[in-house]
Length: 166
Image 1 (cartoon, rainbow, N blue to C red):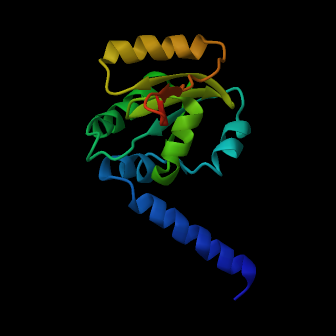
Image 2 (image 1 turned 135 degrees about the vertical axis):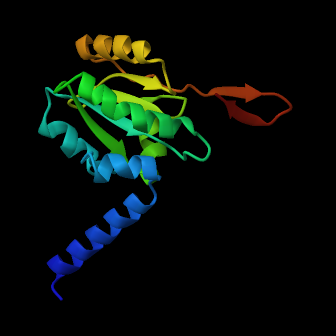
């Protein structure tokens, strides 16, 4: 077997493992609606491919722990339809969510992170009322890029030991 064929089979196995880690509500987005499932390594190229387009990244975490993820998985396609042609959705692979969460600075799950190209516009976390989504997304579509929020750790010093609180 050639190296190219082995790499292709390895890539397919990795993609299948990523898909298997998705709950049914999220698999529907990928299988039926064609949303890409992106890991951290694929994300930069995906964002650079259409730098003027606003991408919405769906961070689900574990829907067993965060049941609102299933609700957002139902609402997201409706939002994409409502903002016809103005949003390009993608699902973030579960194994890369925590690393990318640190990059985009949101603190609550699930999250929709909005980017124009690679530029951060903002995030909407948790489930929202429909009108809140519409207002916030409309504002994000018009927004200038900004720095993502950063979690700040503050050293805590007490009885001679040191730790970090956030």
